[in-house]
Length: 142
Image (cartoon, rainbow, N blue to C red; front, side, top):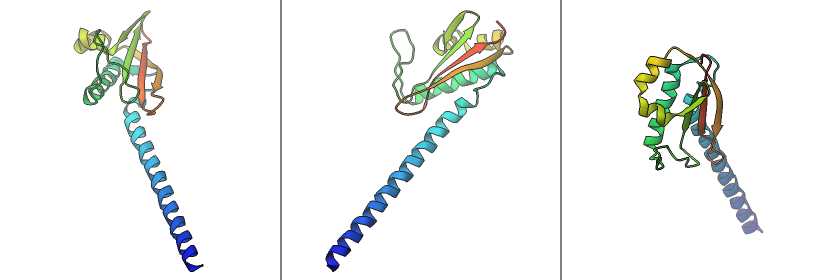
């Protein structure tokens, strides 16, 4: 009888430890996702300028390069479902992806749109990782 109680006690202790480790792992993962998303969600606003938009584009490009996100044949970053970020900017009726803006020149964008007013239209998240996957800005001036 004592052996059964001892075994049962050990099983309960092991189960509690496993549950505690899983809870802590989930909490840590949520904090990591929150820390990843925070620099992008900071720009979820209606009162941005072109410099803010360029800052997000640079962050996204740096993130994609750091995470070795591949580009397609057109030079656009491919959505990897976990770490990739894409940024789109709508000016007037035209929408530009971050790769096109970078290709045309960040300095040119700043020269022409640096003081323009922008708003964050939408932030999308990867379903599996919960990390920011796509951000769309729209010019309020054009």
